[in-house]
Length: 515
Image (cartoon, rainbow, N blue to C red; front, side, top):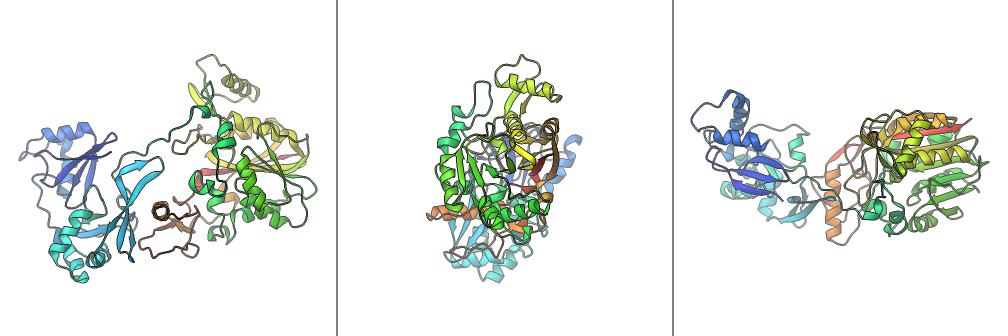
């Protein structure tokens, strides 16, 4: 929770000090301009006597504070001469009329709460006139309202509890980052049930997959959106294709799709990817779906009739040796067990398994404590066992070639990024050919293609929920986003930027093949 308190006499009368979640910010209530500081630096500023030159080490900061009219000695703000620049987080609902905006003071692991700020017709006209290049006086004139009414409205919009406008002395750049974020508490970690961790600190999601997933149709909208789900609608980034169709075409173009051996998908999610594969394959095909979630198996069944299904684990595939022609596992392995191992301590339990495989595959461990993707290693060993001669397995997930695995904190269950360098080493030690590529390059994705910005999606999702509606988590374009009401202020960004789904540039694709 943020707290706003009047600043000491060192600062201008309209300056407040915002504190909360370990941060301190000087906030000018009349302009919305602000500067983050450390508590130590704030104390140094408060000790600086008004009317005297600042100490040499504070001089650069003092100049910046003076430019923002934050100091007691600064020139008084002339709001009428400044340019109102709207936050790009705020959405306009002109039919109500109202602003729909995130609440800076309320932030959960799932993001900010959103609320409605009703507008009169005159205030809507003024809000629209604030285009970042008009002064307050000019915007008020264009909107046909008095300057006094405009100033009263701006006093609301520039407050720390709203943060909808900043008053600038010059136009802002097209993507000024300060207009795309809030001064707010840090995003917290989601609470995790004890059964999601084992006795040695390893992630264990067996119970979560078995009983925690309760609505397969909306799970990947509301709980863990995947790249495949976000691009489950035709998208310009994939040449107008859906994710599953593009993946099939790339694999088929490389000669990896076989029709004379079973095709196995491990963790098919809601079945969209498999549905696309079946449409591309045409005719009868032996397609096996393996999932740890009974609910997701039921959801897949409606999209993939005629396929076989097995409730099981990726680390113990119920398949004969050398029987699989193509195995797919899209964004699954981060859910498999990750184990903390400390080189300075004796290893027990799951950590002993990590140590044994580090030695077996001649992987040099990180000094001290680190997470290791043991579940993904075990899965790879199973893949090596079940692939037929010439068979291929394709896996995707977020991670990097040599970065240490890290656990996510905002989801309702732990997912751990993948050290793909370890997987490549293990695959080759198991006699498999291994090729690692960034997922976007593998899919030949156009990273410059546009999608709905993450903050705009979050605002729309919150509004839909407030009305008892559901908004799927898709990489929408202006052509594919269909809403029940008019919305102004939506932002569009390249797919290399944050959208409704995960950041595609954080994902890798690993292809392994048995000779």
